Image (cartoon, rainbow, N blue to C red; front, side, top):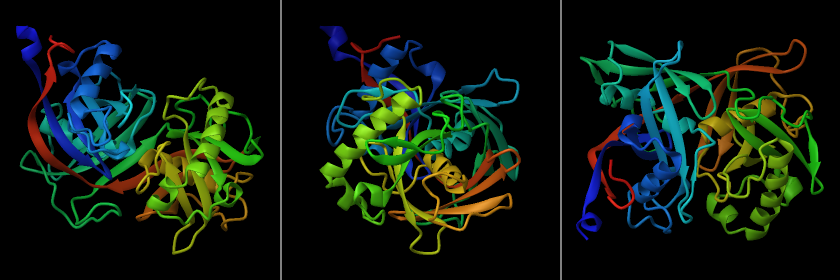
Length: 365
C-alpha cells in the first residue's frame, strides 16, 4: 500500500523549442528500458486524455513532445538528443521520428543542465539526433555563462520575440530509410493520387492539395473538421509507409503527410503538414526540410507550382497556416538533385524547472 502512495521525482526543464514545447530530461535520469521509459513519459505528459489532465502535456501533438539529452560519445557531436513523440489521446510513444522544433531548445537546455559550458558571445553546440543519425549545429546566444533568451527574432506561430538560435542540419537525406527517394521514384501512384515519397530529416508522403479535393490554403480548423480528407490521406500514408520500407505505420507518426499548392503570398510554395492525425498549426522544422527538398526536386509533385531556383544555396519560403517559415537549402544538381544541408533560425525559452512526479508503481529506480 505504501508504494502505491509514493511517487518518483525526476528533474526536468520545461521549455519551448520553436513552435513546440515539452519536458527536457537528462537521459541518465530516466529508465534505460524503452518499454518502461514509454510508461514514464505517458505518465509525465498525461497521455491518454484529450487535455492531458493528469500530466504536463498541452492537449496537442506539438505539446506532448519530450527531449532527452546526454553527453555524446560520438567523435563529432557534443550532445546526443533523443526524442519521443507522445500521443495525446492514445497511450502510445513513438521513438522513430525526431523533432526539429524541440531541437531548437536542445542547445539552451544542455547549457542549463550543465552538460556543456557556455562560451561568450555564441556557444556552438554539435548535436546528434540519435533517432535518425542526423547531425545539427546550433548557435546559441550566451553571456557570462548563461543562455540569453531575450532578443528581436520573431517566428510565426509564437507571440513576441526572442534571441535567435541558428540551426544547420547535415546528413539528413535518407536518415530513416537509407535513401533520399525510398521508393526509387520521384512520384508514385497510390490510390489514384500522385505522391512523392521522400526522406529528408523526416520521411514524408507529399501530394498536391487539389488531387485530394482541397485548396491547400485551408485553416487548421477547417482541415481538422474534414474527416473525409483525413481518412483518404491516411490510407495513402499507410501504403506509402510500406513502399518506403517503414513497415506497418498504422500506429506510427512516420511517415508524415503534406500537401502542396502554389504560393499565395510572397512564399515559394504553400503547404499544409499533418502530424499525421492532426494538422500542424505551423510547420515542423524536420518536415519543412523535406517539403523544401521536394519543392526543389525536378519530377516531384511540386512540378508546375513554382519557378525552381537553380543556384545553391537558396531560400525556400513555406507558407503555412500561421504565416511562413524559411529554409535555407544547400544542394547540388550534378548527377541529379542532391540535398546537402539546411539552415533555419528558430527561438526557444525556458518556461519552468524542478521535478516532475511519476507514480512509483510505474518506475522506482
